[in-house]
Image (cartoon, rainbow, N blue to C red; front, side, top):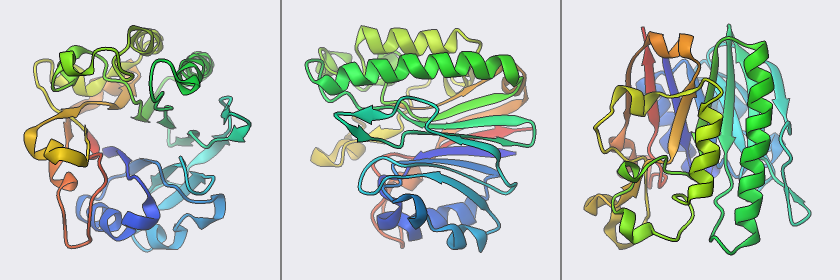
Length: 260
């Protein structure tokens, strides 16, 4: 089985690119973030043509998360986390059961800066996610929580810790909450299988960051222990960050997890 999580940074703008990649790689389960589509605008038919079912939580120009699977997701839940910032409802979490696996696709708030109200919203959102996952862990033995966490778990997950000091994504508070979520029994599978590898999943579009290797590992797949034992490989597909026949890619690359 192949599982993938990918922040596509506007599915409408990059649909051909995403479909091309999915057709070539054929993942069984695909979690998407930043679809930037309204609830009923998700390209269900386009994925159906490739043999996939879809579940989507969207709001339009911003955010949006989805689960795309070769098996129909069941018990789909949206809005299980308080998703409102400055009186605007946001679509950042969706969950569904695929076979025996409870899958969560998450798009954690960016935070913007440590002095911005969005940062406090980010911390609150992470606390709510932790509370939800504590309940889910009691109900399901096999769980995947995957997506754009907008947090680099450690200094080894950024190109230059000194350059990011005092910024979001690397603050002590964010990392502490992420650690508390993993303390529920969830394993950062990419780091577990690649303990010494410096591999990023996001690079800024500006200043040639991708070609300079100036990135961060902020796209994560957190797995319950039983599922983790079945994983044989976890890697970032950097080629999907490059331009293809289908056009400009997202600023994120897919994180791929392969099971035996």
